[in-house]
Image 1 (cartoon, rainbow, N blue to C red):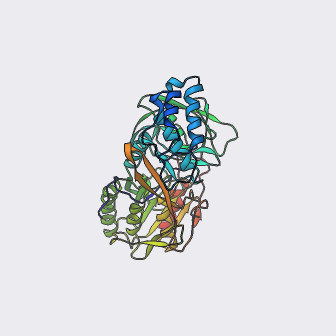
Image 2: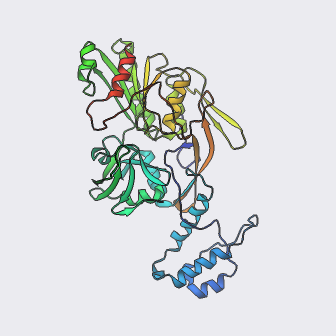
Image 3: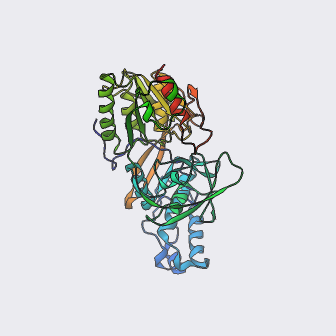
Length: 425
C-alpha cells in the first residue's frame, strides 16, 4: 500500500492527550496602534504581519495592551521572547476549543512528535497523557529506561525535578522530561495501586523503538509462563507478534514477522497466533486499517464520523495473509487509539478472543496541518466508531476474558498464559 509522506495532511490517531493551557488568543493578531506600541516597548517586541483578517469580529486591543505591559513592567522584560509569546498565544487560542486532543505544536515540539512516530528520540521512553488535569504515563516503551526503572501504565507524574506538574500540558511535561542521552531526570510517581508517591531517577538514553517484536517458541522456552508447563507438552510451539505502535517503520517490520508466522502455521508448527497490543499508544490510522486487514477478509474496519454526522467507512484494503489463523489478542489500559481500532474490529467481527484489561479509551481522530516555520496544528476532525457502531471514547475496549496483572514486577505473565491457554483449547 502506498504511504503518504508526513508533509502531506494525513489522518492520524494520537494517544497524546495534548492540552496546551497557555493563556491568550492569537491568529494573525492585529493591533490598533503599532506605532505607539513600538515607542513604548521597542521595535524588538513588535510582531510583523499584524493585520486582522476581515472575517474576524474581535477586538484585539486587550491583547496588545497586555503585550505592551509585559515588555514595560515585567521585571525581566529584556529576556522575553516575542516568538515564544506568540506561540503561547496561539496555544491558548487552540486550547479554547476545549478539546484535549486538538493542539498547536511549536517547531521543537513538532519535531519531537515526528521523532516519536518515527521511533527514534532521546528521553526516558514513555508515552504521556492527561487525565483530570494530571500528567499520566499512558505506556512505558518496551526496554526503555522508564520501563526498566519501574514506570507503569496509568502512573501519575506528580513532580519533575521537584516541579509540581498539576495543570501542565503534555507538551510542558515532555519538554521537562526529555533531554540528551546520559543526563538524568527525577520523577515523583504515584502508582495507581499505591497511596504514597515514589521518587525515581531515570538516565535518559537514545530511544529506538522497533514497531514489531515476534517469536515462535516452544512452551518450555516461554519463560513468562508458569502453570502451562505442567499441563501441556513442552514441545508445543506458539506464534507471537507484539506491536508497539503504528508508525513509519511498522509495515516493513510487520511484513517480515508475518512471513515467518505464515510459514510456521502452514507447516503445522504452531496452532495459532497471540497478537499483543498491550501498551501500544496508537499511531497512523491508515496503518491500523492495514494491520486489521491482515486478519479480516472483508468489511468495515473503522468509521469516521464528522461533527455534521457524515460517516466515512474505512474497509479492508488488502488481501491478508492471516485471515484463517486462530487468534487471541492481548490488550491492557495502555492500549490506546489505533490499537483500539484494531482490537475493536477483531472483537466486533468475532475474529479473535480479546484477553487482558479494558483499554485506554480514545475515540477521536486528529489531522495534522503543517504550518510555516516548522510548527503544526493537530485538529480533531472526527470521532471513530467500531464496525458495530460503538464509540469507545473514555470507555475503552472491554476484553472477552479479563485478566489483571496484579503484580507488575512479576516475571510471569498471566495475560499471555491465558491467551495461550485459549489458543490451545
